[in-house]
Every structure is written in structure tokens, then in C-alpha cells.
Length: 293
Ligand SMILES: Nc1ncnc2c1ncn2[C@@H]1O[C@H](COP(=O)(O)OP(=O)(O)OP(=O)(O)O)[C@@H](O)[C@H]1O
Ligand SMILES: [Mg+2]
Image 1 (tube, rainbow, N blue to C red):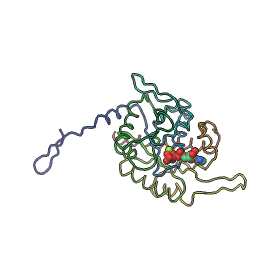
Image 2 (image 1 turned 60 degrees about the vertical axis):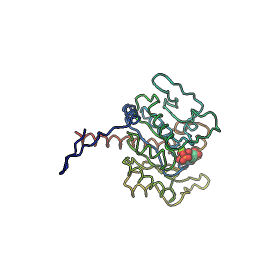
Image 3 (image 1 turned 90 degrees about the horizontal axis):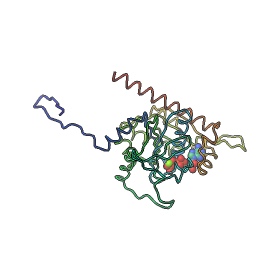
Image 4 (image 1 turned 180 degrees about the vertical axis):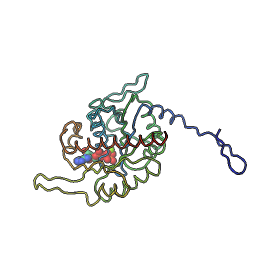
């Protein structure tokens, strides 16, 4: 029992009890070095493309990686990775995640839906339960990174990740360079910061388009930028990824982009982003360790 001494009579405070599912998630995540959420207030800006391909670049760099897709209403990472239709096997230790390219471990509701027409009609509490189950019921094993592909916005799933999951080491924000997107993503940065989550950095996607016919580069989305967000919120800009029509094609055909185009500028900048993320997380962990020593 905690005792809080005040000037008057002492107040007896009940001990803080972590609810069981949080405790179970914390136990499970002890085997994961870093949990990183890829998010954005905005929809359609490339979160899932970046989450799945960043996870693959982390594998290329030699890390053990899991990808947890919690976009329950629009799971898209299995399609982008070319692993739709895998059947998940439940063993005594838990559900085996799907096997992605390079041995990436993947969990997505897409593997559990009966067919392409089945809608997911879930309200918040079910989604929260599903997020916890994706953590505790899946045999993730020992991981260096668990990358979470978030749905757009700051609704139920974001609140659960920001407030209830007992271990989120950092959040990465994806924006396109439109002022509309920058405004919405700025709010999402404030949301995660207020709820105590550490922003690791910003990725500007669809930055520019190089037109091979004219040889000119165009900023098609307007005058916003990841740099503006980076300066306003004091968060590093991790990458500026151009528009590349091969990304859409590769995603649609289930050919993981970074494996199909290993030498492309996009792949190189994703690898650089993965290295920066690792450095930022390692140094912030070292700082924490020094503080507690
Ligand atoms: N840099 C890029 N160049 C060209 N196409 C891209 C690029 N990034 C993503 N795309 C395409 O844009 C579309 C949206 O990408 P994606 O599904 O990853 O966005 P999202 O933010 O996850 O969307 P949602 O909010 O619905 O979850 C996809 O068709 C994808 O192939
Ligand atoms: Mg998505």
C-alpha cells in the first residue's frame, strides 16, 4: 500500500493494478526490442506501403522484424507483400504469424476474413480487444522491431495504441506535401505527444514527380512539406520519397517494392530511414539507461 504523507492525516492510496491484458501484452513485448507505429492523421498517404517496405528494409539490414497490421477496416499489407490467402496455424504457443518475404512475420485481419466481400463492422471496444489479441495471441518470438501499420486518423485504434499498449517505443508520421495533409498530420503529432508517445520522425511521401518526357520534376501536391512539420514540432525528417508509378504497380501485383527495385532512390531512402530510426531509438534508450543508472 502506498502512503502519501501530507501535512494533515496521511492518505492511503490503493496500489496501481495494471489490468490483465496490459500485463500479458507487456510480458509478450519483453521479447521485442522496439515497437514502432507508422501513422498519419491522413488517409491514403502511403502508411501501409511504408510500413511493409520499411519492415522489409529492416530485414535487409539483418534485424528480426514483425509487421502488425491493425487497419481492421482496410487491411492492405498482405496484398502489398504478396502473401494474401495464407492460412494461419494455431499451435500450443499461439498463432503462427504469416511468413512474409525474407522471413518477415506478419499479422493482419486480412488472413482471417472469409472472402474479399466480408466487411468488418466493429466498434471501438472490439478493435481494442483485437489489438491486444494481435500482440498476446501471436507467436512473435524474439524481435528487434515490431512495426505497426495504423489505420488513418486518431480514432479508437490510435487511442488504444497511444494510451493502452504498455510499450510503444516511437511513432513515425507519414505526410504528403499538401498543406491539407500537413495540417492534419500536425494534429496527429500533438495527439501522440499529449498521450506520452515519442515521435521518432516524419516521412514525406509522394514528394515530387519526375516526368521522364519533360525531364522536369513537379511538386504535385502543393506547398506543404514534411520539413515544415519537422521544424514546427522539432522532429527529424527521416525521408522524402518521390512519386514512383512502379510503387502502385508493385503493390497491386503483390511484388514487394524494395525487393523488386533494390537500387531505386525510394528503396535507398527507405534503407536510410530504417538506419536513422534504429539510431534514434538506440540513443534514446541509452539516454534512458544513463538516467536510471
Ligand atoms: N511514393 C508513392 N508513389 C506512387 N504511389 C504510391 C506511393 N506511395 C504510396 N503509393 C500508392 O498510394 C496508394 C495509397 O498507399 P497506402 O495504401 O500505403 O496508403 P495508406 O496511408 O496506408 O492508406 P490508408 O489510409 O487507406 O490506410 C496505394 O495505391 C499505393 O500503392
Ligand atoms: Mg493503410
